[in-house]
Image 1 (cartoon, helix red, strand yellow):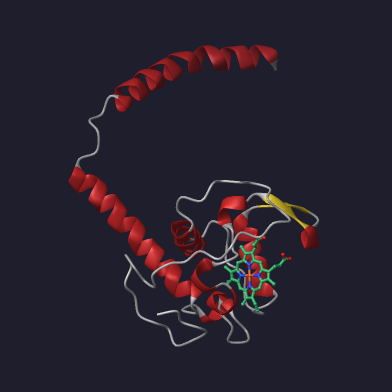
Image 2 (image 1 turned 90 degrees about the vertical axis):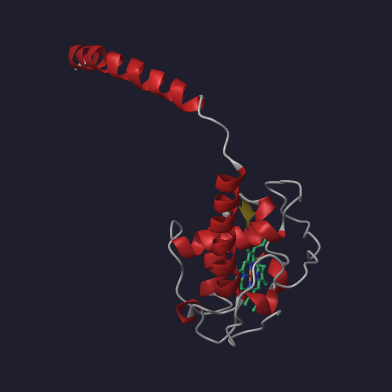
Length: 169
Ligand code: HEC
């Protein structure tokens, strides 16, 4: 077993060395141009808009009773993405933000949970994080609720109201 491992390592070392060289040259790339950064930002805002729509009921599977996140968390208020991971009393363990989203989908909304690695969950996270820009990151903040964030409705990501749930636009 040990001999096999040593042999494997001996074969792998040159590969690792080449990979390290490649990584070195990758680091030396030119900084992103303004056009590239604008494109990346536009991609992010597309997902933020998708998150906005989901937050206001665009995916009917997420709700069995017509409620959407926006009914209880307008403008992502009290969703506190900057405080995760943290201990959640009713689950008796430390959870990541998406698990709490799924708890709300399944309990107050009686809907079907999203896969944690799904594009929809990433969109929800992108939306909530965007509305919490500039907030200090405070993982574990358990007992203190942050105040609702004041946001100008839809600024930066125009989208169509879904008609389900409470639309803030
Ligand atoms: C009917 C009201 C209601 C709806 C609808 C609702 N929630 Fe919640 N949400 C709550 C309540 C109440 C809590 C506090 C639960 C607790 O702490 O045990 C909570 C807690 C949370 C938390 C944890 C916040 C923290 O700091 O601990 C997140 C994240 C969250 N909700 C996201 C969502 C998302 C996303 C949706 C839509 C999919 C949603 N909620 C829909 C009532 C709701």
